[in-house]
Image (cartoon, rainbow, N blue to C red):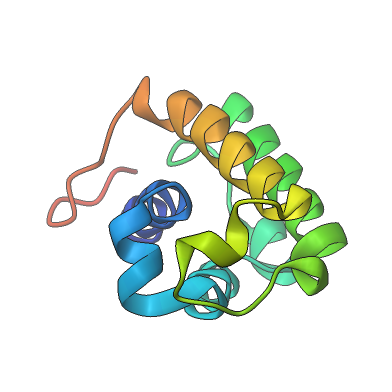
Length: 114
């Protein structure tokens, strides 16, 4: 679970990383989120690996993505995203939710927390 949490942190950061957008594109960034977060997985994430605040952040971002991902162009060009309201909101939200995860930071991936 600690590794999954760290990957989620990385993906939230990827949403606002323009270099990543140009390398892997919006479609892949969104797909990476769904590799680690969906309705079933959300129910399996819990304490102590995720704080209550982090769980709320996960659900907020996931719900926002669910409502808006179809309106985001699949692109590698930043110019294609400049006027896309949905992408801009996702980027802003990812940055805000990432701040919540950064309070506790990344977790050790070798020693399991129990």
